[in-house]
Amino acid sequence: MPIATNATASMQACIDACNSCFQACEECYTACLNEPDVQARIHCIQVLRDCADICAMASQYMSRNIRRLDLLEKSSRVLNTTPKYTKT
Image 1 (tube, rainbow, N blue to C red):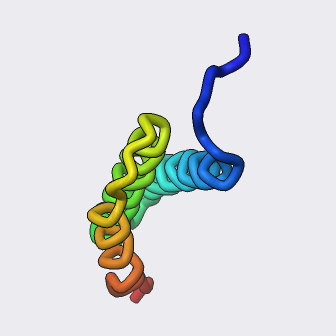
Image 2: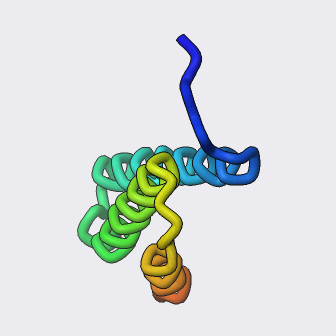
């Protein structure tokens, strides 16, 4: 069944990218939970969960044609500046 959409091609590309990012974050943090050193990965898991939530919300907002994405952009910038996980 085709999807009725008002999204422009560039917006649809962004929705698709957000959905892919959401899936990647979900898969990665699920994999982290199955690692033997899960305690050492807590910060990484938290960042991945936040990223997945932001990607899902951005996709939802764009699907609803909401143009005020500036708050989500600020949130994603914060995640991008969060110190990366490093194994010690």
